[in-house]
Image 1 (cartoon, rainbow, N blue to C red):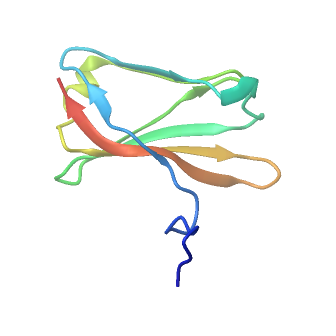
Image 2 (cartoon, one colour; image 1 turned 135 degrees about the vertical axis):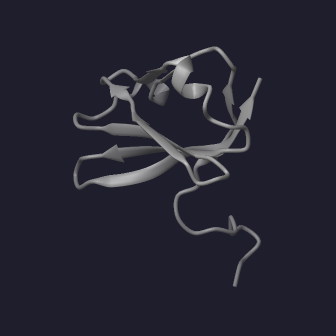
Amino acid sequence: MTAPFDPGFLGYQPTIEPLKLTTGASFVQTIQPSGGATFPAGTQVSLTITSPSGATWSWPATVTPAQAGWNIPNTTCDAIPTNSRYTMVVTYQTPQPASYAWYEGTVIRT
């Protein structure tokens, strides 16, 4: 049963955005915590992509207190087809490990 103020879901809601890959270009992305915050020690961020045929690719970010980033070469990215799905998961180690789907969506190609 829902009320008028009910958001209509349970659990954490990730940000839904497309992930744009350009043929011949590397995937270079940096994400920073908002509002001047920092990533706690031990934070892990990973990007996993699943193609429509079920092939998967997964990369951990390089995480510092100020940012998480990837630099995935075009030779790898070019093999990822359009309409693949991605999920970016962040795992905080304190006070106990907790993982959140931070972003998710569809891969688009240019």
